[in-house]
Image (cartoon, rainbow, N blue to C red; front, side):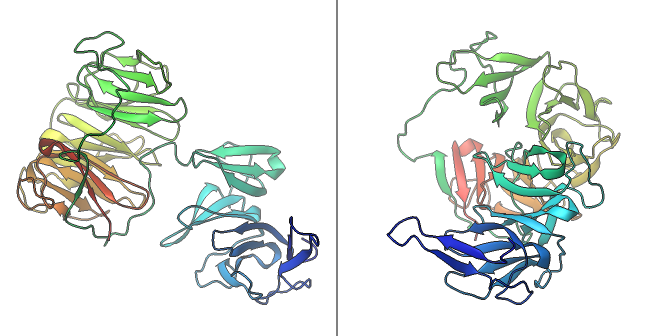
Length: 430
């Protein structure tokens, strides 16, 4: 640190020399100099990233180059100031995660610049959401972030991936290959399959799973949480599991989601409402609807699939109203963000929508079931855009037949549950 350089030590060979790979040994702001560097990171191309602390920047040194380029902080092409950065990590998608120590926060790069993901520059402190002079960070195998919170004398764990549906921003103008590839069902040949829950016929025993409609993976307990007839159940993923346990009963559930606090959100199609449940709670708190069936802003009509974002806003597929609604945390009324113009095929309309997905830029994706298409609604848009399907009902690679669910992988590729074609279709992002 005080030598203002980064050195490499050879572990093999007879010499086992120390070699300077960045910095001159003298402090300074020029491209080949460093000033009190702290954290470093080496990527798969052997490029070196340095938290150049007193220069308030992150420097990247290409392999075997003495001059660095500023990728974040003072002097970079992106206007985003840092205050004594001390740690740097890259994820698998080459996004930067920076410990901005004297701003008491963790920031990450996105396609549109940088944003704070943990802590706050305005309110350092010791609460679970706060940091005080953090020093370094690391990822665990599940993608969660561990932070050395120095002056709070603790290690903080931020569960950034506890919601498995949260993915990176997908550009609003992104396009997908229009011919899908069947990755499950359809005519892909015989594959090895294993029953992991149920499979013992229709019934209400704990080893049975009547009419499951939605599920999620709970990494915390290594289990499946499943909407089944009149109950929500949990099945361990450990080998040898023969039955589930009831988490919530006496609920006509259809859709299921989980927030970053591990609260469950369940849609009740007969009560026309969505409730949030803490683990161990069988009553729940009303978060959407609950005023009988109807099309008012405080009502729902057969809510089906739901989605919860990182701000705990609830997105509801309001099935019989042919619309998708957003209920902000604590709101008593929802906002119509897609459809709501009657049943139809115009770009302002939906026809029996089902599965929904919301990315981190608050763009909505809807399985528009009876229109045999998937449609995208950017935040604030008055109409949607068809991204796959929409070529009539059929079995072609560019067609869908009553699509039921949508999801994305980490790269932005789209997966569609194509119900009447008995397949899952993959549409690659261009």
